[in-house]
Length: 267
Image (cartoon, rainbow, N blue to C red; front, side, top):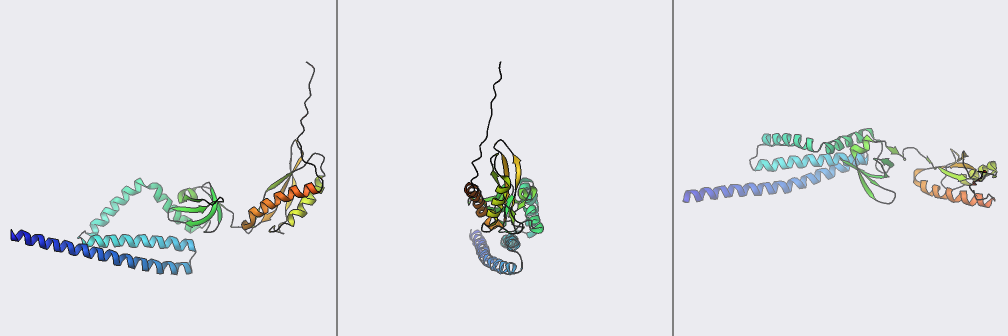
C-alpha cells in the first residue's frame, strides 16, 4: 500500500512541477512576446508604411504564440514532431473548412504587395465607400461617410473593382444646371464659370467645365464640373449647388418648367 502511495505522491509531484513549469513558461513567454512585438512594431513603423508594419507585426505575434504553445505542450511531454503532424493534419481540415478565410489572408498579402490603397485613402471597395482605417490580415476596415465602421473581406476587396479617390491630387465634382427654353445659354455658362471658379478650394487648373450636356422638355441642361482635392469634395459639392441657384436667380433666369401640349383630334 505504501508503495502505491509513494508512486502516487511522486506522480503528483512530477505533474505539479510540470504544471508550475508550464504556467511560468507561459507567463514569461507572453511577456517576452509582448516585448518583442512592441520593439518590432516600433522599428517597422519607422522604416515601413504603417499598413505593412501592422501586418508584419500581427503575423510575427501569431507565429510567436504558436511557438509558445508548442513549448508549453513539450513541458508535458508532448513530442513536437507529433504536434507538428497534428498541426499539419488540422491545417488541411481547417483549410478545407475555412477556404474563404484563407483566401482573405492570401488577398491581404497581395494588397500589401500591390498597394492599390493605404490607410487614410478614401476608396470604394467591395461595394463600400469610406476612408481606410486598417488593412488587416483578413479584412479591410473602412469608416463610411455616415461614420459607420464596416469590415470587408480582403478576398472581396481584391476580387472587385477598386476606386481610389485619394491617389490623384484632385477629383471632379459633377453637377447640373437646368435652364429654360428661352434662356441665354452663353450668358449662363459665363456666369457659372466665373462664379464656380471663385469658390474656395476649387482648383484653378484645370478650370471648371460648364457645357450643354443634353436637351429635355424643360430646356437645355448644363453640366457644371469644378475640380477640387478629396478633402474638400463635399464642401465644393454643396457650395456649387448653392452657387448655381443663387447666381442664375440673381441674373434673372426663370425657373425651368416642362411644357406639355395636348392636342385633341376630332373623332
